[in-house]
Image 1: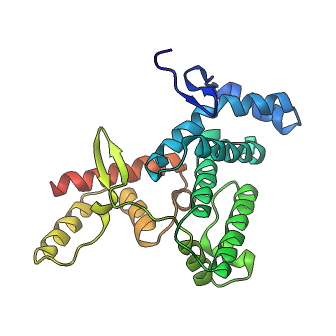
Image 2: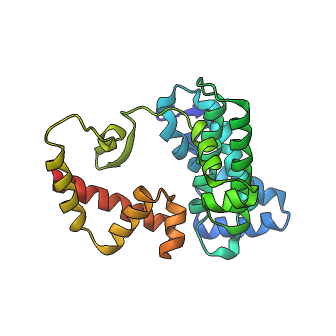
Length: 256
């Protein structure tokens, strides 16, 4: 059985991969109440769940638990996906799966948060999911706060309070084995040469295209998600992700 990997009793080596046309046809049937098509979609996208939970492999959680939680996110994505929007299912499904896994990790977080903050955060998360399904995009913090009749600051504080701790050695970008870790993006103001590094970074940013500068500004200065940036610029989330990674890679090469 070489190459066989089992998770939750499923042989991952034998998982079916659906073609885009098959996925669309099954989504239409599932939307019309075809339970068999819905089940085929679930089994046909289990590899998508596997690819997502691999990102959380360093959290010390049981892979079977993460897989089951990821499947819940997959099912939610299938039930809420709108085939008329003209986007690939994976573009919508991956954030839903990630969100479900992160919620599970937050609930199992050893860091204790006050009940009121946790309740506020869960209301915001539920509101975010509802608005995502309605708008077929990730809502902004302002939209969530408005829907909950709350201050933006209170929503941000609650959501930040339940975010699980992250290792400084967690990779945030990996291209061809040349990884960028979280600690690479954390500022260190203890050295005398900081101003030289700041000049080098500014120069590297100046060499980027206007679109790349705009994306980095929206992502890291205004704190927008990739989905929000996609809405502002008018491109897909996948394109934002590629451009963001490319820009960061250019900056890193400039700083070598």
